[in-house]
Image 1 (cartoon, rainbow, N blue to C red):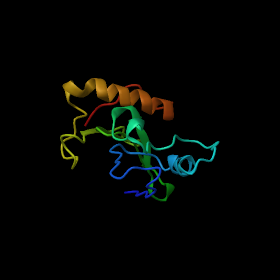
Image 2: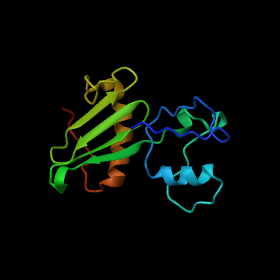
Image 3: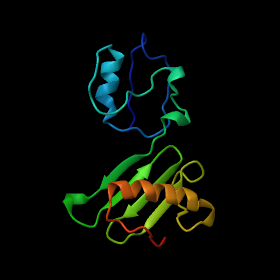
Length: 140
């Protein structure tokens, strides 16, 4: 969802953050822009060129969940500026998409030998959120 901030004295025109960001960062960003201290979760979004708006430094993967009506099965995913990793909690099925080369998510790379290190990194992150999740999962 696009977010536009117009505050010419603080945010130069044309700054774009290409990476997904968490809404948790929004209150902290607003307080940072108006110069108020914030003891809130999240990090302020970069709003100056030197902050790395659009660079890899602000590319920590975000966790997203989809669980309609709080019923099982549900899906958890991690996403950053390049990758989208999706795990079905019920089936253990995994999906991995390279947004730079496949923005429509047509080609699941979870079974690709070339992307196993990327897949393992996302699996490791997922285990921190779902400790009971099995160490191995068959890719579709």
